Length: 423
Image 1 (spheres, rainbow, N blue to C red):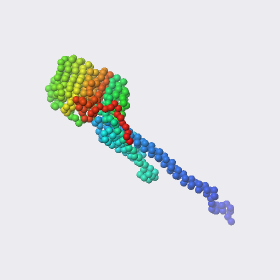
Image 2 (tube, one colour):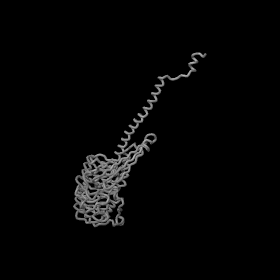
Image 3 (spheres, rainbow, N blue to C red):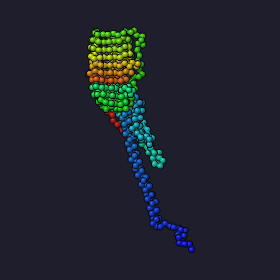
Image 4 (cartoon, one colour):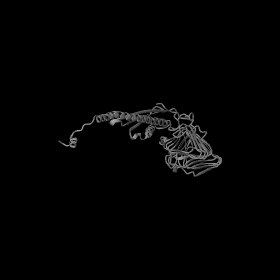
């Protein structure tokens, strides 16, 4: 017979009843915990899904409002507004694009209405089997603007070295009822201010007082007159050189055509522009009590600047007919010389001032252009300085000077732009 200790080693052992019960409980607990865990995970996913849907809806709403706001500007491109709104919506959802496939489709619809549809798909349970293909999110937003405001000021400069619209001192740019837009920065110093129907900048806004709050990061507005050819009937070098013509009194009546003379108007002298296109190949300077006036006329600054110093006065009404109808001052694309109004006695600038590569400087204490029925400025840069107040009116109806295509509108806009979400 084997010893007891050897028999214990060789004999099989069986679990006790207590051990069997403990094992069954472990299996049962596992079976009960699994559905509970799945339910918890699903609850977490549902909360996350609701948050993601809210994020997508918020992005669609913001993009639809941004698109409707862009379309309110006379001359804005529907195609550009569509692309801008879709890019804008994607920026609003941030890092969600890293864990889901996200797309936004913007659609400019009838006048003033803009819609944005958002789509997202992200992974779900068990390799996208539950639900099949992953979690899907669909949102839609429709916005509309109640008023399409006219575009009355466009600062085109986009370079970082210089701003597009600037102000300093106690100067003011007042353009109530229309849109002031900068393709670059709006920089105000001291107590300078801007008051308009809408203020927009594709760059940044800094300093001063701007009312209403500017829309920063807005879609850039392309030059509405870029397709126009600005050239005189013949090259300036082929025109007889008139030298410098200084006037201290009397009336200089200029017929339309080419002027290769530097005009210096002083004393009580007056320059009268006869109806038509006037091509200036030299600078024109007004000072003392001289006066610049014209009706149904446009100054085409091919070379050289235009300067009006205090207390000289100005009253200009732009072209009523012809290829330059609606314009009052135009600089050639190669002319970088400024147009400077340094006198408060600039009463009327009726029409469009177009300076594609130069700046408009308004630097004088007092109101400028206040008597104009309407004015539009499209310039490389606009600078309002000192204590000047540049007044931009937008009363287009009944004006003898028509509004060019791409700016303004047929009627003046409201002081505020009602935007609303319809869906």
